[in-house]
Image 1 (tube, rainbow, N blue to C red):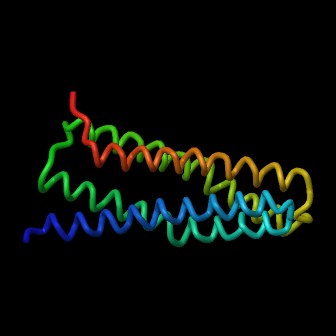
Image 2 (image 1 turned 90 degrees about the vertical axis):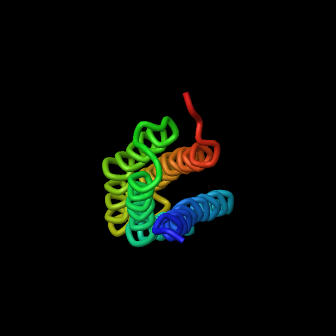
Length: 152
């Protein structure tokens, strides 16, 4: 066994954690939205912010680091599937840095100041979950890219 196999295992486990956590939060958000309970929706949004910062972000970083190390060992940065994966990852990273993370923080602050039933609070929650749903689709496309490894 080479160093590549343990890196691949770490990469896959971190990706499962990242994507599984993001998917779980979407299921909880859909369930809360369908219950028409504004307080439950606010609670899910708060849990998503906590999970994003403490679980999903470290998992994403681990995916990237293990992936880069695997490319250095066994692949090339000239491979189309690797370039596509890195571009999609960069989009996800930028989305997290410039929208999802800051909006989660703003929302947490707003929830401390206002009632969870407030229209602005609910609109921000809906927008946050819409963007995170789009990001989840991007993550699933990255997995497909890694599995099928398209070439030119």
